Length: 445
Image (cartoon, rainbow, N blue to C red; front, side):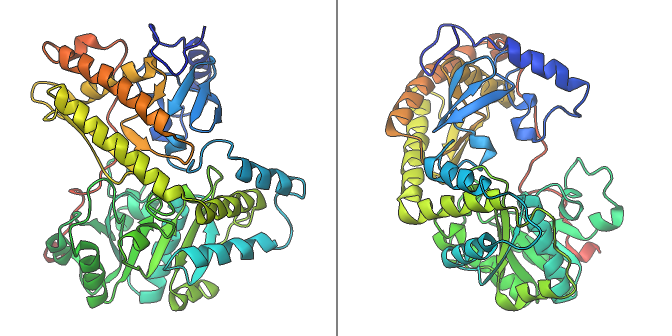
């Protein structure tokens, strides 16, 4: 019998998952299209590797095991799998066609809707991924200002202009790497030390898991403008999750340009670059940002339906409330288990992160111990709570029960060699970082 969402007495059977993985090894380097979905982020031998279907806040793997999902497609599933309004819009559009030889009215309708909801969106252009949108934003900023340097804070995708700041930068020309540097979150001095009169833009995630200190986002905008640079918010994660108008609405800081993607389409491939009219109009000149599938109608239909649900129903209040319950409940359980100095949960309720650190113990082993027990109890978890509209109070209640068991087991395992309690291979590290890398103060150039 496949495992269900409940207190199971054994790890799930993942034999069919492993068969698919064996087939992928020889044909797909490195077997996953997204690192966060790949087998390195799960306890090898315990967690499933392939999913077959989803419904609401639950997914089923290829072996038939059921899980309550807190990964949510690594962010895009904001309303829940198979949301009726979104699926209906996609199905109705499918009956008319997908990609056409001329423009489609949905391009205008969805642009107008995004313009109504996002404060910075005086004009709108669509793409298919967050990396595509942030790359377009940087190119546009360089064209508008006539400058080339970019300073960033956060993660902005796989394209050359940015990924040269991180370890997997093979293939990125050194000349491109030299045009990008970083500054530290909640540290205006680090931005002042890096910015100069050749800076085209300061691009940043408005929030990952640490809250902005009072005046920080406003300060970044002021410093950028004082030096003649554009202020860009990468809202790939926060857009349509922190609030209907994203973090720029939530924190009341309107950027010159912004990018949105993950939350806006409930799983369809969509992104948008939005911004001030005078800047965006440069796209009508020498800045090339076009793609065959930019106006593909299935994604636009799904996006329109998703945004209408978000506009008409209390989606964001729901995400924040349930996420806050999970965050605060986790921290209370950790304290009760004597682990408040070992693990904590932090962030905005729509997307929170659990962290692990203890002298003498590998934090990835500690995380793996919690994950393997949650997997056994039917919870798909990678350290994040990415909330969707389909999550319920009952889901949170059950998750906290499962956490109580998992954290109790973690405390017991830490009394000795914690790695001995692993039932499979531990989670492996990833390269993602938000601050403290590739800094190049202007005096060193």
